Image (tube, rainbow, N blue to C red; front, side, top):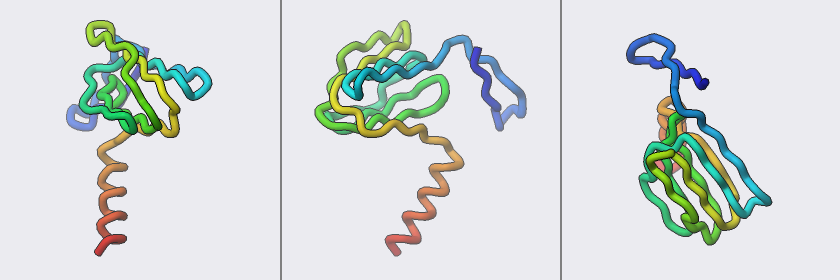
Amino acid sequence: MNYYYDKENSTRNVQQQDHQLKINNRKLLEITGVKEVDSFDNEEFLLETVMGYLIVRGQNLQLKNLDVSEGVVSIKGKIYELSYVDENHQEKAKGFFSKLFK
């Protein structure tokens, strides 16, 4: 079971679905616990998972398998980066870049 802290309700909630990432030789990425594929192209995927938004960056990325009912996504191509977007970190990054480009 996965746990996360809900700021709005200040309670601890239990997620029913597991979230796992499996990378095979940086060429195939299998992800479970996906709620929605928000956007994708051959260099970047934005996925909403049960643990937050996940950004996958790479080269020649292709959606190999999508099963929304099971929450499973497979992406093939050369994987360069995986990163999660949190509300707190997003604001900090936004502030940093806004200062940099003033």
